Image 1 (tube, one colour):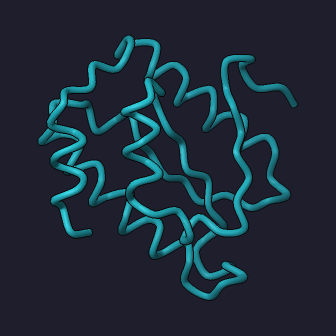
Image 2 (cartoon, one colour; image 1 turned 90 degrees about the vertical axis):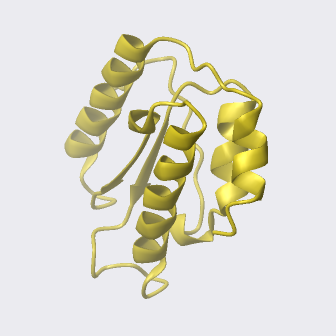
Length: 119
């Protein structure tokens, strides 16, 4: 299975370990979209890491929207590690969403908003 060449995959032990600043820095550094692919609900090795990640992603989407960045640029999906085909489809959908939105236009308020969010 192949995904688009402009996608960079970053593996982590658990999506629940990704702090809010990690996502915000991605956009501040010019990343146009972030897809978080976590374990299927109920199958996280770290018990509830994927549920924590989902709450964080939803909170950050709100912060992004307040900062003038489309919330659709950040998405979380739950997919089995053995399910390559669905993962590739999620990646392709995300790439298409970002392509339609165009390059991210991060305002300086993203930095201020993300640091004051207290999430």
